[in-house]
Image (tube, rainbow, N blue to C red):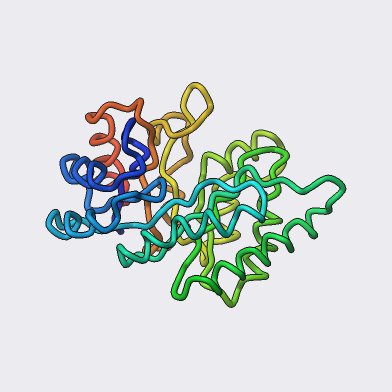
Length: 251
């Protein structure tokens, strides 16, 4: 089980891998994750090898409607292929049904968009990061519909426990453990961060985050673990979070 540092932590350069890789190595990580499609994938490939770092995958630009999905996936899949880690995380957190559209119909449109993405990129795997919005399309039930419809494709869940907590607090779904129970076999990755005092997420994992020790048992050992914290955290806090997750909780 390898914990990757998300490039989101860099205030500047989150869309470049070289500084993220150097930061990950200096902070004791064994892998790095590109929160945005990196502009320097070809150049970073050699650096990752020289540093002995693994590469977790690429986060696609957040997409709110199916027409923009193909472009977002293309921009992420290309560097993922260059780096030989064709896992793309598709953030559908802002997706909502169109006016007068049923959730079932909306999920069908997204399913077609994902089928098309797989046709365009051989060997691609996609992890869906669902919504934390009360009015978002992809709560637990609708995420299940989408994954079931794509059961023949290499698609799974990028579990964001903080978003699950937001849905639970809004009274529209279960918390992280409910998501873990429902989708355990389909979890391809998990975003490790806390909700923080401002409620915006990407804080230290222990800052209003879930019970990570309990959640561990519901996440497959092969699933990608990404410390997905923001640039407001000092390097010492990032190192402390890594040590706690790896040494105490055995993440």
